[in-house]
Image 1 (cartoon, one colour):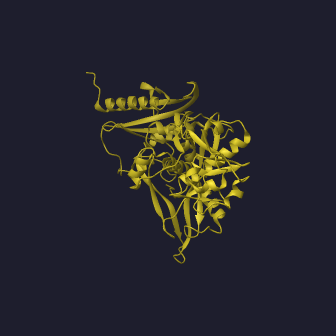
Image 2 (spheres, helix red, strand yellow):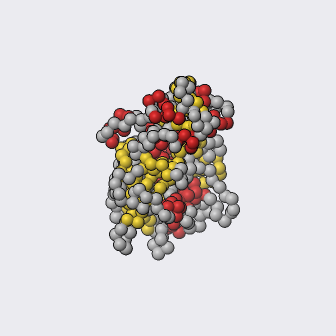
Image 3 (cartoon, helix red, strand yellow):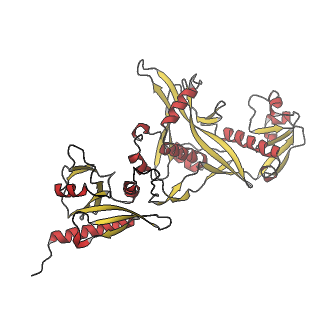
Length: 436
């Protein structure tokens, strides 16, 4: 009588599921079949952009259970004991080998290189349920096993195709009209002495020409203008001009208008040319609530640092960004470069601000910089009602508008996880502080 045991069915199901998962990760999977003696299948690397097969293989031993728990299993991980005969067999392999554990009842799959055990206990493998999942995120780490480290220049392409990259740039929405007039003074520096203390400064005077998005008739600015010369013209007459002086004057006007528009929250640092969150009280921090890509969150945008030796405030760190305006064709954009400003108490400049900034920048990782940009993007692009929802107070904005630019879809994903595993200096470069 011909029979097929439950263990045979479970094993076959596990191999089929693992093979399907491997192919969804971008690998070709070749199941070995009846002649298997410790390697159930071969994963061959494939370039996801071109489809070209790379003639680089990783062997896989697949172990399947219906629903049993593994040794010392909890929510974070478990241990698995390799078969001693298999371990001896694998040691002579000329290919990298992994073991894939499959649990049918939950469709969980985990992987590990077979020689990842400690030297004192090579049979015992420790699995992390987050880091060691057998899924798309593991593709580059598995592919990295094929790099021949004794040959310079050995390379495998990224296995994951397509990821969104955020550009640290916003589109500037300009008002339709701009005010132009003849000034009694040659420059803004000459005119400032004649203005009252409460006069706005979102204007530019160059070569006796005054430009502003604000109507000067409603302000004390008329004291420095030639009466009867104020005109309202299309903004494009200056913003789209090919004249070099016009473009520079317009960039200065955009920068000044931005500072006035957000002066309810932000101050201007002359040394770094950056806008930074203003402290609400001396030596006090505060959080800014905003909406990230998915969830509502908050950032400690003003953060006092207390010295351990005496409990006094050593410095106050303010989140900041450097705005730069660029014209592309007839359209205007603003780049947002995240940075920090350091003060002594939230108001007075710190004597060693540049040293503190240099030290902080050395610790920053890509995710932290991206998080800061997303916060600034929310502040700059959020509509009045959205700001009121989170800040409980309506926000009246000025003439400039800002719109987010959609992420650029890259042809391949950067294999950061694989690099982190392989780079011997990765641990020392980690930043223990998540900036946002």
